[in-house]
Length: 105
Image (cartoon, rainbow, N blue to C red; front, side):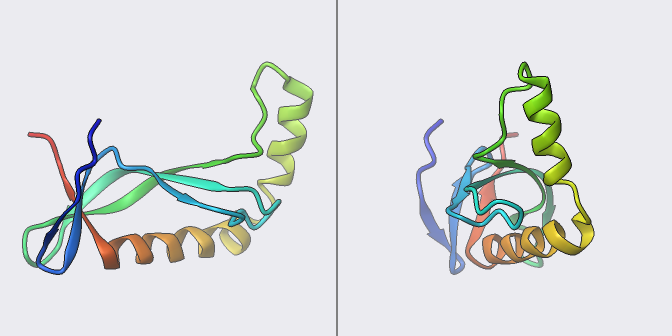
């Protein structure tokens, strides 16, 4: 989908399916993280901002490789509220400082 960018009220307007990619941000392995918003709320001006994200690490193996995936998952699940959550909250703040979303009706 086209993610045409326009400025509105100081924010960059993007489509709801915009992916945000951050290099070397995974706190477990320094892999690249991709954030896809899926939960929304309106700001004080009635513009949509993201409140929930799906997150993927570039080092995640295919699920068909069960042993490799289990090892990856075990190493990417240690103390998520201490290790992963601060990264996710920082990304959320960064995105919501700069972007608002055009949601489909």
